[in-house]
Amino acid sequence: MGAPTDKIPKTQKAAVVRDKKVAIEDVPVVQPSDLKVGQVLVKVLYSGVCHTDLHAQLGDWPLVHKEPLIGGHEGAGIIVAIGEHTDTDLKLGDRVGIKWLADSCLKCDYCRQGYEPLCHQAQCSGFTVDGSFQQYAVSFARHVTKIPEGLPMDKAAPILCAGVTVYKALKQSNARPGEWVVIPGAGGGLGHLAIQYAQYMGLRVIAIDTGAEKQALCTKLGAERWIDFRQTDDIVKAVKAATPDGDGPHAAIVTSASGAAYEQALDYIRPHGTVVSVGLPPDAKVSADVFWTTFLEKQLKGSYVGNRQDAVEALAIAASGRVETTFRLLPFANLPDVYAQMHDGSLVGRVVLDLWA
Image (cartoon, rainbow, N blue to C red):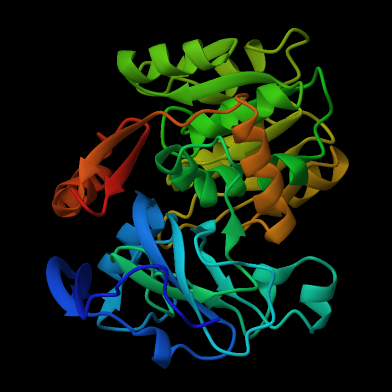
């Protein structure tokens, strides 16, 4: 099982985070003979870039990551080696994805119910273990996801986190076909995929973001209403007015990394509506009026990342052609510039890095 499909080099290019700075460096490659039981070595061809990667670099989450750290958790590649004695149906040459959830025990109460991201033993790619911003990445056989044939590897990469995350959040919203969902941050990497998965699920979309470029993207992808938050004095009033009965949307998928977006969502969501928390603004707090939240039966749900089945479903939908990522394909060396655009909010859609360009 451990025999590689091609000659494995001794060194590789990797993006290494130290002291809140990232640099492309030459680092050692884990050799097939050094893989542990349950591990696989993936030749990473492409990796998407996620806001979580930026948070890991900046260290602005209330969580501790390993350091030095190789980030990345949207890696699409090919299995080139499998640890000896690993029990798996994976084969050398299989196309697989490395996701945020790198591993979990699969035995605890959370894992048994499909809440694998909540496992106390969970490992996270590009955070607690090195991720996909390297040409050869070690991952775990039971959590890498096979990429469907016919779905190009570069297009698959963003689905592995952004796609899975918003698909799972929409499921969590319990919104039904024909109902309205509002997506703050609709023109971003998460939001533009959320529009498409919402469309696939038969939902009607109100997009919130700013700028003509993002408006054009959201409209093209099927959003029926557009609200520019920089040109709108009263977001709550505008969102309610965007729904036919004026009561507001049935669900909100907050992909924006703005604390204000959460406060607004709890105000404009209709009675018995659900606000799903996805974006993670640092140090943000949510304040809700207990009386009206109870009286109007409003709900706030946290939605972390999807489980293994969510990943399979999200990739299958993308492979069917119903969801397509808007992204720019850039050389690996451009990662620091991508982080800068993410930080100032100017990034449109998603970026995928070619690890070998």
